[in-house]
Image (tube, rainbow, N blue to C red; front, side, top):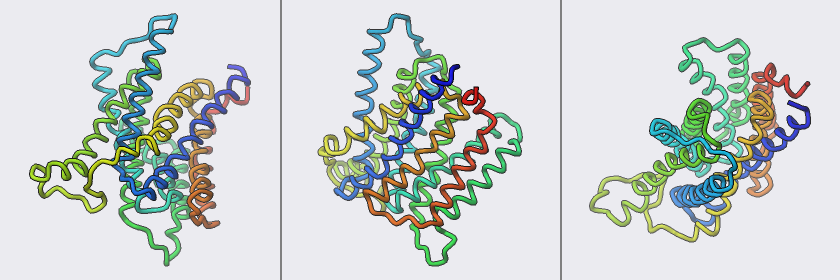
Length: 319
């Protein structure tokens, strides 16, 4: 592949990752407007499903070649894989409810070393020395980036827990999406996976908010301290939901699916790590979050680990 095509892929992946990096800050702004996690995720996935369905319809009608159709096995596997996608959004958004965005995104990036563990277990092979070193660098960077090395730091354990759960879910999503139904068009595959994610989001909405509010007798005894039981506020759809759906559910997957084939997995992974500094910068600018020099050092460590782990895979860019 020519260098021009690789550069085009770099721009697509970089744009997709940068858009992803804005999401947590927008969610935090939604929280400041008194919306709940269930309302944020429900609006994002509902409008995202609608948008991807329309795009799939357009692609099917305008395509000059027959598009691959999923089998029943493909659909089942993609829906199951998509549940982890929904859990990633739920856990990540819950995390930023309790801790700064700049810390939550660092916890999400633990998917780098968790992915190494998942890959090793599934493939039944010991990870390479390069991957082990990269994982260690990520962990060291995390200590700095979360600022836990300072004895006076006070971070909510719930934010840490949800952030780590988000990283685990994200690792599962990435592992599954790269191995299941790879013959399907990206839009069709994304739509089916989003259906699985929507199932988890709607269950979260029912069990944590609208169920206990509207059907208190049925949901008696079911309560969570980190969510508010109240009527659903539909204004979330036009105030934040549309933005989150377009820039969190529709555009990034399209850009990444277009860009990764041009960059290759190694270079694409390096470029996609732009999500980390973009997320921190957005939180610094819009939320006025304090980011200390030691946290920037930790972020640099994590970025270096990602580059080091994928260095052998970027030969296409040099040709």
